[in-house]
Image (cartoon, rainbow, N blue to C red):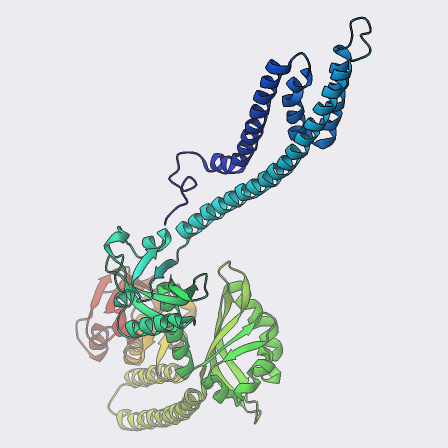
Length: 586
């Protein structure tokens, strides 16, 4: 950027000194003018003094009178003329009568007064002219100082701006680029690109847009566009460009101004926001947002369809309006405080259909919305229609109930047939044991039925089996919560039943004071389940000699795959069973 000579940024003097010099320069001119006026008059007065010192001594005072007229004005100079004439006339009178000047002196004094008055009139006019000139020069100095100030300010603004400010000629060639623009465009030497066609810097359709903007500026119109251009370091950036004409003194367009702003980050943010908006708009879930006061300001199309609400009415409802009358108080007194306290809330709810009033079962997640400073500005919610799943669960419950009913009938029939068939061939105790095993199966089936045949709790299953045998008070259960899948529940029930009947018949529970510790734990970093059956306080025991059905059942373990360790210590049986937790829970 070119600077004014003597006032530019490269001048060695400080900016304040340059401005002061511009203001004071006219004052020195005024003083020089006064000096040039007084010196000639003083020289002429000295010449008159040398030639007519005897008869006209007044002329030696002409220089002083002119100086007074220049500096103080007409009236002080006129007073000085009168005093000078009288003083010199009296001083030069007849020696015998010193107070009375001679006739020649009076005539010379009159000539002096007339001559000096003429000079004062001329000098007064000169003084007025010099004062006007001084004022004009002072005004010019102030103008130059303001111009220098504005030039320095403009230079600072252009250097500080992060916009790329360019000046083009009418052909579109670069003639100027601001310092800030050179930084954002990563230009190390503007001379390397000075004179280059500005439209050639743009990518794709941006080049045509740049040419159109230049054509509009040549016609005196402003134009703008958004385009992609690379910096001199090769980095592609998005720019918002404003192009406008620069008119000359005659009003005709002389040059073109182009201002480009880097909007790459803004464009990327808008694209990301657009992705989120399309995701929300196309989602099949209910997604809504409301202000802190509960007034809803956004609901996606899926949400409107779910509750039968017209899109134009979204901003006229509040969050509580979506609740059924029975759940509105719970929503306002429990759910909203939980969101504020815990940061979110999830669970099953009922929404109200705005047209039919139908309650709609949903799975809801609600969370607070905060600004960048952490201040709560509203609430967001994501809701999934639960009607189909709820109906499926109800249908499954009916099916499970029917299966359980038929299974109980089947087990009862098996028990009845077995009793009638085997009572003549099996001892009564063996027949009773067979009956108890069927009851253990029925117990596991009941527990699985209550959990929709998905999984049941290990402790609940163990308590049910032991309670059916009346042995629960003699057994001590301990261990973490473990879910048994349908595949593991029935083998585990039969296993516990077999261990309990053996303990009741031959082990610790066969006599008073005997007890059983049943415990389970996770090992191998939680990947393996270990179940321990420990008997104590009973008679001395030893390993059975034969291997009947019960022994084979115990050796099959929790999943029927083994993993069994039996220690027949004299103090009581210690049985340990291992299985992969993933298989147990599957």
